[in-house]
Length: 315
Image (tube, rainbow, N blue to C red; front, top):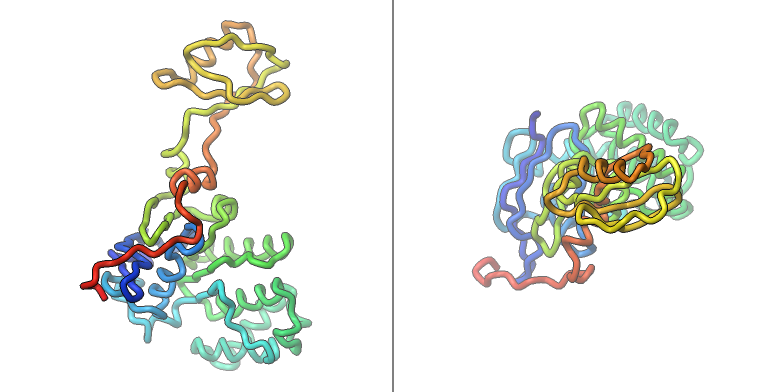
């Protein structure tokens, strides 16, 4: 599949401090790509380089097959930053129109697309309201619309669900899936692991400015699995004798969680349990959550990272 974005060995220093340190990754067209990391890990700095707000100190960004040129390529990108950029005293309809024109749309095109999105996200009655009169969640919906209405090929969403109630969060989530299905590529930056697990195809994990994990959600979970299984029984099994094949790590109703010891396979567990005359109705492997993997990889590091000193020659 074609790569819409290639990032090669990006570095960014502020004075003598590292913000992003030699980060590389690729994103396929139409993917929903999760960029994860604790607060202060370097995610926002990385996104600002991808959008041309910051220039990297070294490294290369390839966008749609050629070297990224912020002046010409920025209209192909939609960026919804974590720090929202709306004009509080401006009417919502006028603001959406103004931002659409900045992205190169004619007035007629802009009005058509704004009406489409306002209707789709149930915002039609908002046209003459001012941003300062909106709740945080309503502002979030407006920011999303102004990010995507010019139909960019790459959409970058930094904490897009912040302030949204569950109904509107699901509404935006459905639109993210629809955009990706239609060929738009999404970069979804967050520290909320459960959202990433539900939405993303592929993830990278950034910590202290470095990439420490890169892969599909499915492969990452397989890589960090710990041989844990849940076994369901026809009736409560009672005490299961100790053995060298597995250990019981939890029990609930008519099921147990167990961890298989190294050197043994799932069929060894089944054979052992069936030999005890237990009637087994389910046997499922339990894969770790992204949150468990995240904690394991960054354990012992502060959530608000301290900068690491960069070489003075890079200043």
